Image (cartoon, rainbow, N blue to C red):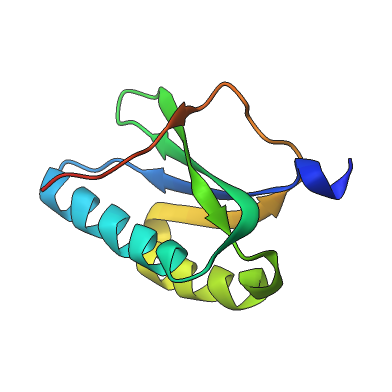
Length: 100
């Protein structure tokens, strides 16, 4: 896989607390926004019904992923994972904003 196909994948589980889910997603997005770059970011939201939603959201600085992963894992706790992987899902929808 060529480096240009690598991306940053943030997977998180949907819970019954929509407010907390949105707050967690906003915090994750804020961290990503502080580290904009060229490595595409994809969210995989694991829904309670077993399905998943994939969303693209900008890009992150590839040189800081080693520092970002623990910070994002701390925000996700047991409800998600963060990883750098070698295949980008080009069919993912674009994530523009997260509302209140």
